[in-house]
Image 1 (tube, helix red, strand yellow):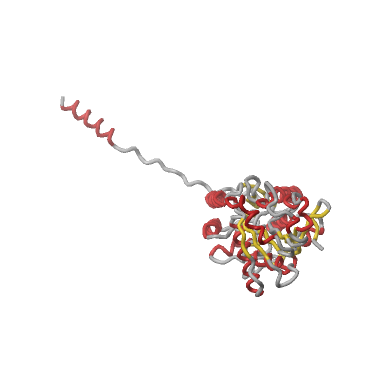
Image 2: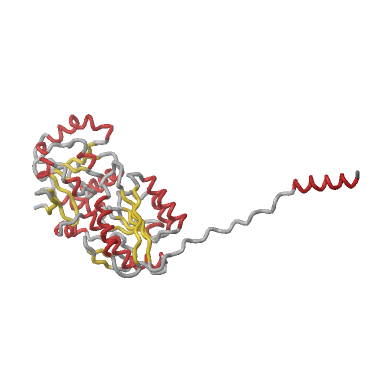
Length: 357
């Protein structure tokens, strides 16, 4: 009986012993395909935010298909669907995966603490094809602008006014991009000592009353109206300001305007102008598509074959790059690479975008 009890106790004790811990091998780092450089482009291919990224996508894909030399860029296009939250999530995913060498952001992003923090986390070059201010802070070393700054765009618009005393109205649409452009325009008026423009909201919740609220400002001839932010809000489902209310040449849209927006101007077209880059317009190309293509060409010219992000960043900072849209100049203290003198006012005429006369 004693022997049986000992055996039973041993079995019970063995059942209570924890199994040996399972050894989990660390996830290996992604293996680099020789001679390649991985680029992720974030565009708005769906959603309601403008400008739509279709033109940028087509131009970038054409460049990828025609590229020559080494390293060869591998492009992954991600639809962030008008969502800043999704843009942040995609950057975080890339940081966790470690499988992307550089990024192109082709949406009107605002460089707030959240986005700057995400860029600081990925520690890879990020090129913006829409206007951003000269980068500052810890993440600035990774951010490069291939579009004019908001201040440069505002300067081009205000300088286009017939006189310093021209009455002006800024129409906002409730988006972050609209608010950023409003501030840049107001600062330019203030710097010049011009009469400050009145700010009128056309945000969705105030759209129904816009006609009544705007009538006192648009009844007089010669008022200049700046529509801040993506043009889609002002063109769909109906044009907020009829062309007949404003003298020709006194309605200005955002740099975010593209050819697809302009094609919907209809009878308002003769009165509308917007800022863009001169060179691609003359060549029959769109500003946004051209800068997106240039972003890839710049990365191809600076990419480190071994994938060292610091080397790529240093080459970007020390380079001058002749692109389709313009010539970009970067330095350690200058990450906004477009010369403001390359800006021109554009118009829709004869079914295409032209430089306004």
